[in-house]
Image 1: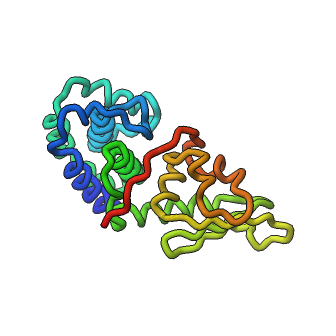
Image 2 (image 1 turned 135 degrees about the vertical axis):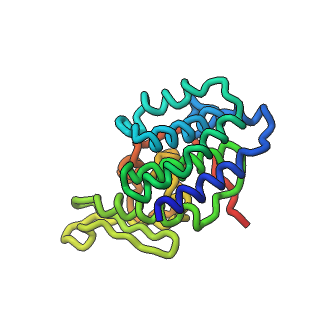
Length: 227
């Protein structure tokens, strides 16, 4: 399943960026402001190259990702896409055989959202990211322990933190669009944006605790729903 999700994400990103005018390749990515659209694509290509070669030590760390961008500086878009395509079979095979972190798939989907938002495109299709989003929500909510508890309702599903029924629990209930929740948990929404979600009970400390890569304060673009 993870290999299929990766393949479909690869296809959507290629469709999104093929034919972009030159000036849009140099556009800054709001979620990764040190990167341009070209840099982000270079990272995705470099990830596939490393996964195919089983070079996953330091996966997703700053030096690992910086190497992807640095090594591909100056390559044109056609070369980047061709390199990614050349690693696709080996990357998906490694995922099928569980020889590399499954987080490779999550990294692709999160960065797909980054590209969508940088380019002003609509939300990716539901079936591209919703399964991965649900897994992430479940992992985060089930990991919440203590007196402050959380109930999350999104995408027609409810998740409750394990201590929600404990005596003296201080419960917060969050109702939010699943795409927005996924982006928030992926540290792609600011504290003010997360506070504007539909909360019953305190939003704090959740706006700091929920983002898996830490909170942020820079407002992020929200793509229109796909029609």
